[in-house]
Amino acid sequence: MCSAARTFPDGFLWGSATASYQIEGAYDEDGRTFSIWDTYSRTPGRVLNGDTGDVADDHYHRWSEDVGHIKNLGLHAYRFSLAWPRIQPGGSGAFNPRGIVFYSRLVDALLQSGVQPVATLYHWDLPQELEDAGGWANRDTALRFADFAAHVAGQLGDRISVWTTLNEPWCSAFLGYASGVHAPGRTDPAAALAAAHHLNLGHGLAGRAIRSVLGEQAQVSVTLNLHVTRPDDPDSAADRDVIRQLDAVGNRVFLGPMLDGAYPQDLLEDTASVTDWSFVKDGDEATIAVPLSVLGINYYSTSRARRHFGDSPREHADGHKESDVSPWVGADDIDFLTQPGPYTAMGWNIDPSGMTELLTDVGARYPDVPLMVTENGAAFYDRVSADGRVHDADRVSYLHRHIDAVGTAIDSGVDVRGYFLWSLLDNFEWAWGYDRRFGIIRVDFDTLERTWKDSAYWYAELIRANALPPVDRIPTHSAVGSTAG
Image (cartoon, rainbow, N blue to C red):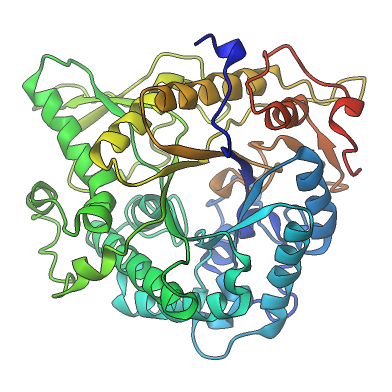
């Protein structure tokens, strides 16, 4: 099918996504306490320019304006996350009614605008007190997470279209506890593997808690950033084994227990020198394997790797790691190689074929599990032009090519139900602070004014037509309706 004429199935869900710490601000208002990202961003040298999420996009006070943008874009669904320390300060004990009221009002406004709320229970802002007690490396955190899930399900009930337990647990475990480039900033490989398991366990416990409150009809999901890594030499047995090894610690460490009901044996063997996996208790894997209504997949780029032998010079792909400590626990003898460009502002290569490859691979592994692209997008160094517009042609091209790649997967028979663009707004981009902009709506971080970029107009046209517009068809203001400021 010609991509310029590509249409999508009836009922295909078009959305966009954000995360609480990245947009909300109001870090100390209405009973909210510190998360690990409040602490981490205040630690000198951790975040570019010393930025924090104290104000971010001030979504906590401007949520009604932002719902107006969501409505005017024509989004079918909006994926947002719930700030655990806003709803349950400290992560255990009493819940804060002022915290849940904020999300209840947001959900009601979305529903009144005809937008399905998709709630993520954990997008990385763990209450600091739980980290002080061991964080995700401590089994008790998974139990506390289940309590949190049950409470929120009881408060927001069936107003939520899909309940997503975790966002990108690979980042939480391995960037947070192995390489230390994300909060809480630890560099302990054994703790990272324990964290991966307890995140898995928390997912299973939370999914079951939601259904115990709302019934078996509750839609439960999880979002994984699965890796597309290719061998440097496909004919090399050593390089092919590298891909197996990275698939185990990057993908199957979550897919295995969540969808197959067990950790893969090769993962346990590859990491035996790091841990004995004694933190996995009888019954854990069965608990983790809560039936999924849909599997969320985040995709941005690909990587290329090979086996490193002996004293040969190490090669390292710029932008792959953000620290001298690798997040790839149990994979110390692997070189990551520079990918061909072009690149985004993150230094990530642009390769839409990886999107098709990933969806097709997961669809073949788990044909009975519907898929949803829950994040995809690109950071570029946007500029406001003399006409007051942001002409982000690079982002429009990126989105066009990747959404087309989703369509290619659908054409091949993969059950993909929707696409959520990352991100609705420019925001606090974790260790990069405010230097990297992913939004289709520009935020002036001095005035907090919102401005639609060309990509927002283009995406609104795509949603309206349920078809892929050409990259050079940027609708006018009047063609898509009011931009709500």
